[in-house]
Length: 370
Image: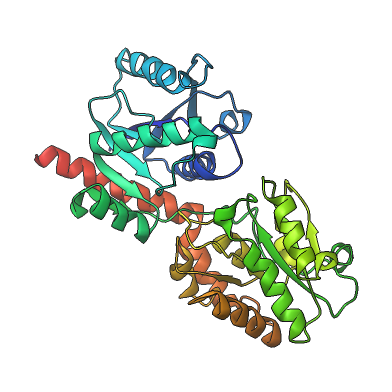
């Protein structure tokens, strides 16, 4: 059987960062690179070495005019010319982040989730809006969460038959359980009895990080010796510091800015706090449990699915969020071997690639029938 030839297009609307859209593309490419029945041409406007290093992926750099409000159109127009001039046309065109905007039809568009329009970040917001137009040009849409399916049906009036659900994956070579590094833990815990809490992500209001600080206060009031580590950069750092100071626990909160390798922190903390009430997917829901630590979160993104495997707890409201954290710490719960196996079986890169190939094959079969 001939290989399925896929052209994967990606723009990364806000720019380059280790999360979000670029991370989705990285994991997708790593997963597909291991499958012999497919060949992938990856069209991207950024000369990123990590993509060039992925084996069995044909990385194609697409130049563009790097001018605010112009660069998205410049990239997609050049991409269209480049792809349509190729005599060896692909079987499937898979667009991500609206990169297929100028094409009359693309086979697939990946939809992550809706985000509020933000005039302070105009480029990100504009590109996000443009990517929505691509949804209606695509013959089929891949979503990464149940919430995204609901949004597409209700807000965009997309038929359910034209949507496939494919959970994101994580690299278990990077995120894995190992014995706690006591030497590393002593850098943050002042004594062996002190529990470590962790929240990660950009310091933005929508991440609801004040709840993590309130949870620390709640635990201290219940005689739990604890300290909160907040990893991330953002505009509200001073506001969060002032809030901790107002509660009288500023000395119990460590702001660590950006950390390149989060894995050692996952391995030393006792509970992972994810207080945001709206997530498109949420990689920490998988990464934390992969390293052995359970999360406390809300019914959003991948959280409810992961929680079914006893990898975390879903809170009903803020009070319940704090109570759930207390329960995990009192019981000293970490991820069991059985729960870890379930996580690996459902969210590893290998599983992801196989599932995506199934979607591609089903789509091509239906396309031939039509």
